Length: 269
Picture (cartoon, rainbow, N blue to C red):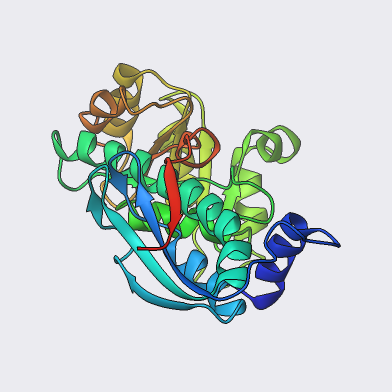
């Protein structure tokens, strides 16, 4: 849930200490118009910005809605000064989030062309302070959030294995987590995939493997173990990984490389 403090920080950053630009009298309406097609996200956050400024949101599309260029995705009405003050922040958050959602939808569609059951997941490679916005955008695009933070699952990575060894690392964390907490183990070779499963991994992350090596690793895993592919996977290579038998394809690029969607905010009728 987006807190008022976050909205206040966004507005304070944009308005500064002496906003003369938006000293406009009277009432007005405004609309957020898509300049290109995409998937709507961040409109919840944009609405919170206008709510904070006592501007009424009179109409908006649902998160995850696909739209074409020229469509209106949000309408507002209220004091002109407040509408104009909220304009840029609303455009920025909606544009960024919709870019993430649109990129996610492209990846999901690419996977579905091969296998309806493969999940596309985000990572923790999010912008500091904007993780909630970006993770919600991933969901709007049809993706999976993966871990929201470090408390949601233990991921045994290469650094842990370097320090403790694979089997010892899994045992170390298994002794310290709740029975409800899953453990994922990152491996970089097919041969280590069954080792991770036998050590007690609930999920085995096949990191930086080519599709053919990923297939080899999946074939070595017991059926009960979830397999996740990650590492440099792009929208264009998603179909190649969707054929490997993995359950999840995770992509940092969903959040760290998504281009903002182009919106325009226009006042008046």
